[in-house]
Image 1 (cartoon, rainbow, N blue to C red):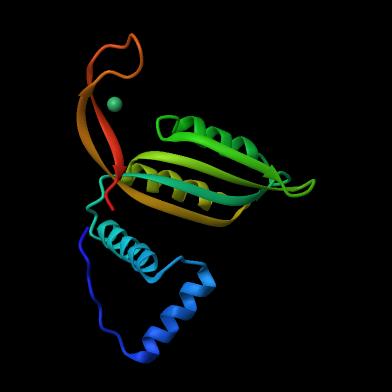
Image 2: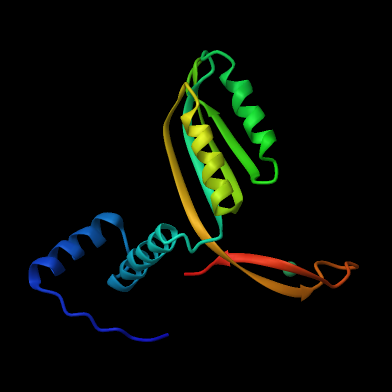
Length: 157
Ligand SMILES: [Zn+2]
């Protein structure tokens, strides 16, 4: 690990320390690393350099909206290659909140998330998209399994 020294004026340092305290970071280094990761990965996404990603897509929707629950289920099944899991909680008799985990090519994940969030009756949609990089590995998984070539995906930063 490299040590990086940063010069900042007093006003900026005071604001930074206020934010660190408010957000509960243990120290400046952890906060700086977090900010840099977000900055770097946002840039990577904007430059279309993130070919693969994992994303959580959250939204609130109404069960009373005509056939919406069915349309959402159809969309998830239509993208079963991307949809890893979903979590649902009912807010009341009408509204529910759902979080869907998607993993795959960034372009496909975006298209799927956009379609979901654009459905009539889906509101407060938010996407947390984390770029991943793939590395081809050659090993076995678990007792009795054969050695195989496969890709592992992990966050780059
Ligand atoms: Zn493996």
